Image (cartoon, rainbow, N blue to C red; front, side):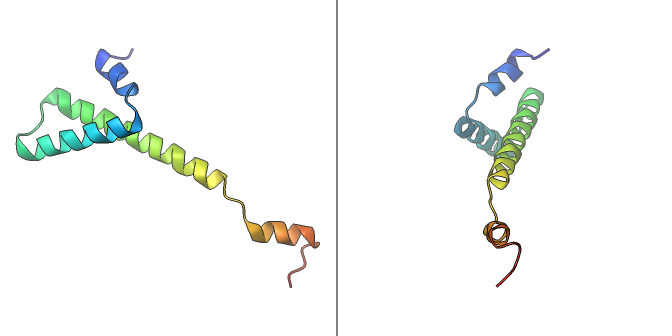
Length: 79
């Protein structure tokens, strides 16, 4: 079951996610974080990483190798 905190995290867009992570990072360096803020930071970081990995995988999946296409068109003969 998701807590209210986790549901709120899921609604953040990518820019808001980064902004909140940075805000918590600055606070941690100055006055420290509460236990709840540490948990929030961990959830936000994991969400950021999952999003980054998914976007990176999507980019890799769309890469098309030109050499492969050239070789298929001429029977695999390289010039």
